[in-house]
Image (cartoon, rainbow, N blue to C red; front, side, top):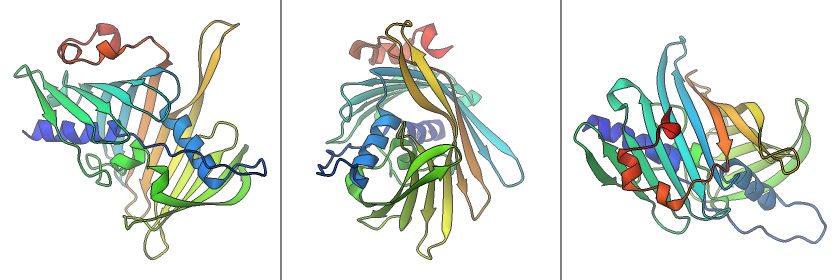
Length: 279
């Protein structure tokens, strides 16, 4: 039972997706704060028609001690900002090896979620968890990884500046309803719209958590004539500033537009995923 609960938490963390708000209109040709946030969500969670990647998650305490999670994840988009389907296969730790999850996500209603437990050859449906809870003891919440609905906050464009060698928008986001932080500042790349840095402040206006995109790679697909480039965050970190604990996630073997189909996200695939998906 503990294995099932642990895997359910992982699925909630990785599979929930943001509801993408409609971009507001303005008449001066400049992007509004809301438009920037919407574009950032699209760039982070909806690139390509589909996606495959391997993930190494390291939970690191202040003394350098580590716990590790290793998995393969696939994603299929129905449309940008719309429904998605996810599949995840666990490689490590040993007690969850060969377990799989499948999630069908809907922006306007609760997701459908399934788990396959190989030890008993059983597929079970599971319910979603609290999206602001900590993910398996990490410094991420489900929502940190899945994305937050743009309409949940009031966004303000504070300024435009440089972050390293990148030109960025600095966005302040104030939650409309009470949550575990009172303010978030986001540094969003003006070229790719990927979030490069986020700061979360508590009720005392003190920095409580820090997110950084530590590595961005251009993932190319297609031949030279029709080549598409997808700027992709391949390493990211969330740190609890007060405890010193941090979580680092590294993505490898990232590929887009692999030709995944709806039929690939089925109970049959949960039991017998193709070797090319999980190696």
